[in-house]
Length: 407
Image (cartoon, rainbow, N blue to C red; front, side, top):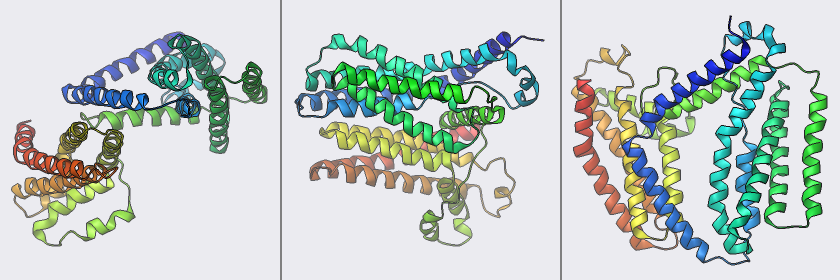
């Protein structure tokens, strides 16, 4: 029988292999192109925006709020599985090093987010607060120490089964994180920083004492790990098929007016099926919402017409090619095959749904391009986006459908 240390090594290796397997599909050429464009365009707009700021801008609270969110969100990666309820529970007394490794690994995975956010925030901090880039390393040490505190605090609160305690702890930790980060970036007197740090230490020590007699909540830890992996698989499923993922459908009664607009009749059977699939599925409707919001934020934040149009076209493409697998969503189910309808109607119905979906997204991009009264930007974005939708559905979609039929 393997010892606990070997179990940890095997779990970590298995997770890394699984991660690398799906990251190859996630960071394909399409997404890398979008990331490069987004980073380049966003960096250009961010640099220009910073140049317009002065010392009156509240950079300390803005930077503190962003970093506080990243520091507060501190899940512990335990890599526990369902069977561990039976096989590892009796070994709880020997699991201390296993969970120490879990905390260390969680820190290593999450620390880079704080490093990137702090690096991005430094130009803003230097421009508005008169700081120097040499302050980066001292601030980085403080931020990473705060991350460690959050992880240990989160692990301590997981001794409580009730979600009420988790919500209260998350809210309280966010307030404390915000307070000490603001104190650091606002360059307040040292005694105030020390006082807030003492509160953080006292909060942790108090709960460590309170929970010393509490046992591990194995079901809670396993459920949280399962949920974390499910989120990753759901994201990876946007780029490739994930066997581990179980589809989720939600009622979304508030979207019924869209379904009610669909005409009834035999010829509309597949159209109704795909519309309902899109509206009720997290992997498709959620994708559309997320990408629409991200692109809208970029468009609103940029004042350059080519960035607006480029962002709109790229995110329309990103949405379109990730919605194409919806066509085969019901392929393994017998019921659609029982429809007394020719198979060609399925492709036609899906094409119509995709056109409507992308057209709706194009309309959103056109409207947000009007931000600040830029009517010409809105009209040019609308024209370019609609032309792209027509080209995508007429040229790109048939080629992809043909490939899918061959496979």
